[in-house]
Image (tube, rainbow, N blue to C red):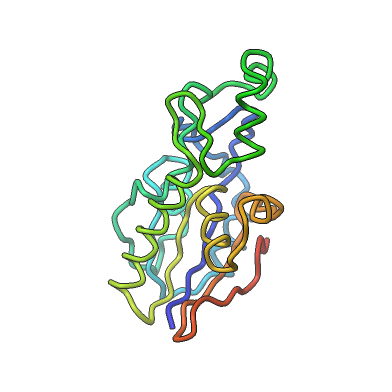
Length: 192
């Protein structure tokens, strides 16, 4: 059985659409990071998105774990022209488009961005590659809200709206296991 431990990167305190914009995480709460580190398996592989908020969080969890190269397929959804803009500013400029994006997230896209389906496809490919290359291993994946939700969506057979109902806090752990009969889910959004 291959066990995945998804970790959401440290907080950014952003109040904007933050997808591929490379804003760093606030990792000043060393006690929270230490608790997270202690809650994860020591003998695990460690991989992260290449965005600094995930990569730096992973760096702080790296002691004793085998670090795999950053994987850009684990990035957050790309919000295109909406990147680094407040929800209110986007709503004021394109109210119908942003409402459609949240109402029917699967095929909808921000101008110049990607759809939820595209996000799900690239994250699924990354996870399949990890599970194929490292069967039976414990793998810590430091990523973002969207990729973690796509993992839950796939493992639990959820609709997009059902997946969106889950909270995934910064520095939380969401665990899932791939066994002979498919996926099983451990704790979701567990704070150490």
